[in-house]
Structure formats: structure tokens, C-alpha cells
Amino acid sequence: MRPVLATLLVLLVMPAGASAQTPPLPPLDYAAPTASVSRGAPLTFAVRTTAPDGAVTVRVSGHDEVDADGLLTGPEGTWLDEKAAQALADLAVWSVPADSVLRQRPGHYYWQAYLTGDAATGAEEPIGPVQELDVTLPYADRGRGSLFPKFGHKGVKSFYLSSAGFPGTVSGTRFKAVAKTAAARWGLKALRWTSAKAGVHDGFNVAGFSSSVDADVLGVQTDYVKHGRVVESDLALNASENWNAGPGYPALDQVDLESVVLHELGHMAGNKKHKPRCTNSPMIEALGAGEWWRGSRDKWFGDCGATAASVRRSFVHRVIRMD
Image (cartoon, rainbow, N blue to C red; front, side, top):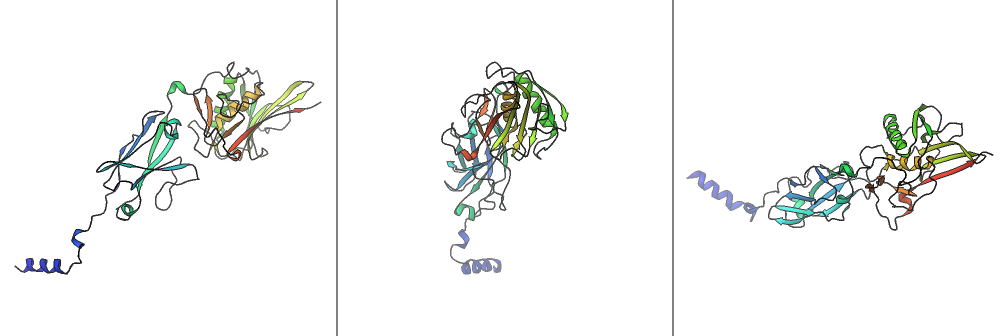
């Protein structure tokens, strides 16, 4: 009898409602999506939780950087938050609309779910683990093959690769691969390495990186002309740019090296004019971070309307007369 009596006494002295406290919410459990989806395919984020409707948010980022609490973060514009809706008593979902960047832009993304409001306060782990998501492009759509005659003239020049001034984000091996492939698509030929600097008149055609390129310019292709004939062509890429060397697509704050090299070598092949931004051509007048053009079906541009000029970088083609 004594154990029963003791239990009754404990219940009598407990504060009102203490025996009815809600247990903490268990950790968030992900039900979808898979690790890889094809561009344009239906995409749904599904989170198993008993949290109330409106308490679950899905965050998707172009980076795996997290803050002190473990929540994905990064520069403004490189991540987004969307509220998940309660589909079942224990399931919250966000179905991504067809016009979302996540269904239209191939790339490598990171995502997680987290709780907000009272649900976060009463949860064991209000922030879920980070997952990876690849939005892939069908192989048949990937950029490859000759760019002439559809996008301009075929070139006949050869050029050396400068070993000077490389940025930390680009290796020599990767730059050589990009330059050789891009050159072949225009009918050009990339030769061996040289210590000569790009953008300096020295009698050699040279492509490489330079710290002398203006901050808002991606690359400068220079033709040195004497008696009406081009005697030297140089390509100087901005060494201080945040380059994506590939072969994967750029993050939202990176500039795609392959796209820029394709453009500048198009000038070296003899194609002088720029096309309006967002045109289906490698010879566009400007390119923003996170954008690319690698082929007629392998391209992505962000806001093609009234995007601030500060988020776009221009291409420069110049002619220097030597006579």
C-alpha cells in the first residue's frame, strides 16, 4: 500500500497541467526529393513531422555554408525560403512551381527544412540536416560541337596559353582543357604553355589571366592591327573574378569560365559584334554571376529584364592600330 500512497501524494503536489505537457517534437525526417532530378521534372520537398501547418520552412541554397545554428546561409540572393504546407497529419510539403529557378536551372544545390515559431521552441532539433540536390541537364542538350557557321565565322589562328597570373579558383589543367575545347569549336588551336603575359603586345597570340583587366570586365580580347592586317590577338581574362572552372555549372555568385572563353575566342575567330544580353548566342554583350551559355540548349540567364548593371560583367573587344 505504501508505494501506491506515495504515488498519489506526488500527483497531488505536481503543478496543474504538468502531467499533460506535450512531448518535444522529434527530429525532422525527409521523405523527398531524391538526390537528383532532371531539369523541368516535377519537384517536391516533403518533410515528416507533426508540427502544425505553417511551421515548416524549406531552405534551398547554392552553397553548403551554414551559420552557427546549422542553418544554410550565404550571400544575399544565393538561397531562398519557402513555407511547406500540411499535406497529411505528419507530412508537410512544398511543390516547386514550374517557373521556379530550381526546375529550370541545372546545378548543384543544398537544402534543409527547419521549424519556426512555437514549433521550433518545443522541438528536439528544430533545424534538419543539410541534403544535396542535383538538377541535371539531359546529355543531348549539353553544349558541344562546332559553333560555326550558326554563331559566326570559323577561325584559323593558333594561340599560346599563358602560365602567368592564375587565380586560385582555376587550375592550369582545367584552363588548358577549357581553352582547347573552346578553341576547337571555333576552328582555332590552343598551343603549349608560355611565360608571356596575356594582353601585352609581344608578337605572340596569347590567352590567359591578367590583373590589369577592369573590375567590371570579364575579359578583353585585343587585336593588334598593322597596315589593315591583324598581326597579333590576345585574350586577357580577369584574374580577380570569382571563377567557376567547371565542368559543373557555376554557383549563383560565380562566373562561368567556359562561357567566357567561348565568347572571347569567338572574337579571336573573327566575330566582332556583340549580341543583346540573353540572346541565344555565345557572343552576348554581358554575363552575370550564376549564368552561362555553353550551347544553344545548354544556357541559363537570370533576370533578363531590368537587372542592375552592377550584377552583370561585360566583355570587351578592342583594336589597337600599330601603324
